[in-house]
Image (cartoon, rainbow, N blue to C red; front, side, top):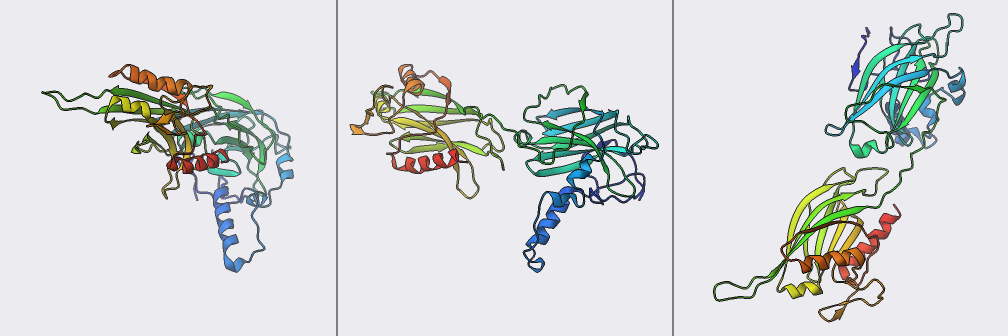
Length: 402
């Protein structure tokens, strides 16, 4: 096999040997992709003919490479690289420029045969290895190679970029020379790209910890407008009252450790159960819907007896949608009151809007034909006497425990 230097990589290379046992093939010594090893080992473990005595561990993925092997050589030197992320295309770009001051594996000749390896790490899983060419006999190698990963902005939040430097060993295990771990959820990407920076090489982190993410309050932005009813005249028919609803956007939906948020909003006018729901926005923690709906009542005065409920859901293809939160707008009750208002002279708990949500509804009713728009922090707990909402609250508790 004849190898050729590649300056830009957009796909995982063909990999032949385990990380702990590399056999020379030519100028470039390849390693088997750790993901392929894991998939094959898992398949063998689940095979009936293999019995139940096999187990899969992180250590087994490194074959004969033990923790002690990572500390055979003193870690020294730095690596220079740059990162960029294009939101429109979902492409993460990594340019590995050079290293300097690396440890000499060959003490007699005071040199090493270094190359650089990149992984995207999520918990214990490593995804899509990328490797540079090998630079022979150098402690200050120049690579100038670019790697690209395609992943969504949501996926980016849960990845750690692991860049490690190795020296090829012709007769045994490759030698670890140090690594850098970049938590991508806290990395600041610049629109015009990042200048290459120097990073000190550090010891091997055998298990990359998942970065804790602060969960900001989830907000939902909506706009409402009241079109009042009209009584019949000699020239015009009677016209029902209307509430027009624009579901605009949400911010900071709760993140998932696995999978994506595919969200939609359901709108219900209580107690009539008039319902509408938005389109599903896939793979976003900050979805924009921009959908508009209209609810009707016989008279404008009827709106005093109603509540508009908006619930945000995480879509599931099998129909087991998860509720993320809710808002309710109505004339509601005073904040200091423990007695709920009535709806058509019936005591109901869902008439429980207070504070900004109550003021928002009243502002809409007081200024007909004019749009009012505002963002609200969603509620995690709602009253349950309305039959449909009992299941809602049950799911709300489930989402809290996620």
